[in-house]
Length: 123
Image (cartoon, rainbow, N blue to C red; front, side, top):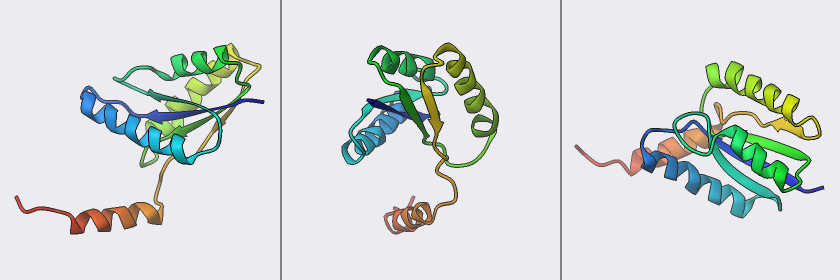
């Protein structure tokens, strides 16, 4: 069974911000398991989640894991994303959807923040 993986960013009105999500998604794809990958956005960017699922469905995927590139629990994680996935499950009952945890309070994020602190420049 071919697996689909969706890397989901929040999205921004700034194209440069959306390109960063796409760059992260490319890194995930390069290091991740063999699968069909799509990158999409909750707001402001394209494609949206529904279009990413539609594309994977057309490719014959029967299981989709959604990886939200969101740092903290908020309205998107608690309410909007589960509701969107429920709607998509109703539209594509033959697909199994898996929602991966958000990034959260992971020590690796703290390590990145400490590394960035050392890279700071005076303003």
